Image (cartoon, rainbow over all chains, first blue to last red; front, side, top):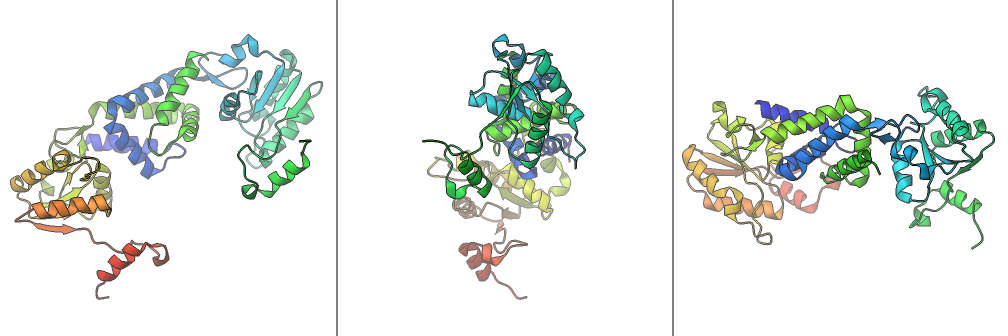
Length: 197
Length: 197
């Protein structure tokens, strides 16, 4: 085995560590990259290097940016008094794609979990309480995943917040959803929260 | 949107172009990379840059290596007189993982296809005929995919080879295969090729 075969194998092994790629799809991706070297591989290598060098966590909310404060925390137009709590940066991105929310975010970095020994201190919850005082927050929107851990965390946070309005995303039938394919819990939640048509 | 958000979006877009990754899994992969910066992201960027800079096609067989001739073509121990024909480098890697074959390879770079206007000239077939003469090949093993295009190409090659023995991989029930899950064609092929137990 020559050096290049080792280099390529090394690259395949690294690619296979990405979520969503196994060894087989990593090999396919690497061959695709080698074939499209100028068009995809070199730009991808450069983009990875750039992001690796510049990306950092916002000290305020936990979002990812290049500065100490991310562009959302630095944007004065978003000082609306509303604060949206999400588990992860991916959820923040999803909320931003939805374009429904104009305030700022607070990224917990996970959920409370007795099993994994994740307590409030591990979750940027002290920072959350500090921000609510410092930024004049009037409404906290809980946008946590509708999972056991997500909802446990939501309840914990709601219990510890005083003097602010606490709301959470509505639960119900998703847009495009077919009842036949929905789980019982969603049907129950949607029925309970039914509204005048 | 600040520069970093643009950089990250650019990286997500590039990742989403890889086979097997869509926009959603590309976002997940990028967040994973940013979290594991030192452990995965920087090594991946370096490995991509290395391979992009050094990988090239073997002038003899079409495999990927760092030299004009790949390590298999350069390895004198593999001058066994056997030549294995594969469609793609991925198939060559699969054969090598099988560790059943000790000779050299010839990568066609695709299959004949009237629809896509792929003729023998596009497929490194002239080079194949030249190699058979030059390298004293006595047996050509056809390891093409068992698809319509793959088998058309296999027949075309077999018709144009004289003075060498032409074999092909056996067709039948795969190891671990359950009859109930196999298609009719495989069952028929396996029955026709049945052998004394």
